[in-house]
Length: 573
Image (cartoon, rainbow, N blue to C red):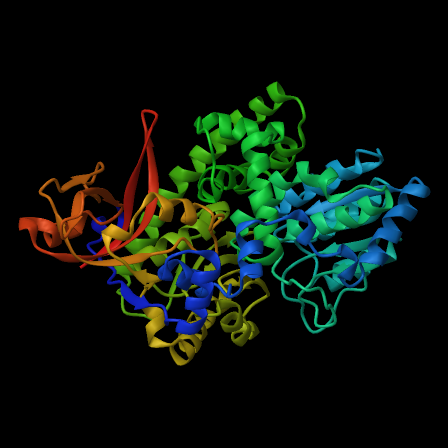
């Protein structure tokens, strides 16, 4: 909708993924008794042997790594057990986003199954900002907490941990962000991205680290991994929301977590799903249905509301919490639309359409949605993007990046103008003083212009394989379903078909006619329904039965109890 309002159409770059070794594809196809292009999809994902395919298609909880392989895990468990023995008060502290609130709910609710002196703390997004806060430590000090377990934050909180130490408060840090040059002097620092940590998998999210902690604690109580599966609905939600690679342990945890979500979720998640009345959720539904609602609490009100919902075991009470969160989510959507429109207007008014970066500011923009707005702006102007607002006496921003460009490194190169910053390759946050805003904006533009590859300024659709419609069989659908859950490094396969024609039923859909619905054929194949969200402006490509090329995913569409195959169009030309 925004693209049409502002008369901008992004041209997509189609890239066919490199063909893997024919020999490897042939061997795997024979071993698994599948078509060559299915074997190609697997080899592209690093799966080359029957055993690797078995682990991919049949994940098992026994393939999870021993939690004690993580550096400092023994120290973390020892300190928690000591706290329980001495009847100390434990504060479980976490960030206000999905990863942080699910992690806090997971660790706190696990500890409370056998120890009562446990409380939770989520910092206020506006009063305290991201991560461990001095206010949070003061709260711990005032209320007699001697141990803080920090989840999804803390890896750079050197001053905060030192401040806590002066007050005789110990820290255990469970984080997955990149460490700085020095680590905080905590009792234990669990972070697989530490240089000196040899844990076999370093792509866990914050909630995933929390799960490894309870897995280690569970061993002391003779609990098996099966005893902990009820917590995996939280872990799967965090994996989906934090957009971490869907490989290794993340794939196993998400696979079984989805089973819990669909069979027997905790009341809080059940209440959220109940709101949208969907029968079976896949990972995409978790990203677009559950995650935004959990996030909305911290964005609009306070992250505590999300922890209350996720920790509640009475369904009626959980439904009440979910209704409140639904209202926050509606407010979040309205703000998101309004601010995106204002930001796009600013770019045009200031004649900044041809820059290498998007950096916009308005002091009354809601801090809780500027990250979403940054992502929206990338949909229109595909380039590294920062959205600033006023936060106290400083400017605060959320950054989002484009494929292949490390925005964290770019911020580091401009850090002389920043008060603080942190984050990942594709998403970060920062604050700066008002007088440094223009200096930073100029420096950021310069560093991006000098370092970004020109290809990174055109959105890419990576194509897995070229196929014909005759290849789209029930067997293929069954196999593709087993590729789930999808996510980074295991994305939904995108196929290319040529000489496609619409049979004459093409029509635009949606309030602004922004979507496209087709009924397509190739050669003498049967017709297949196809839908392209945001492709309404490409309808002329399909008229008069002109042949065209189509990029699409294959999906099942359920309508009135009937399941049919549908193509989800990504682009046509």
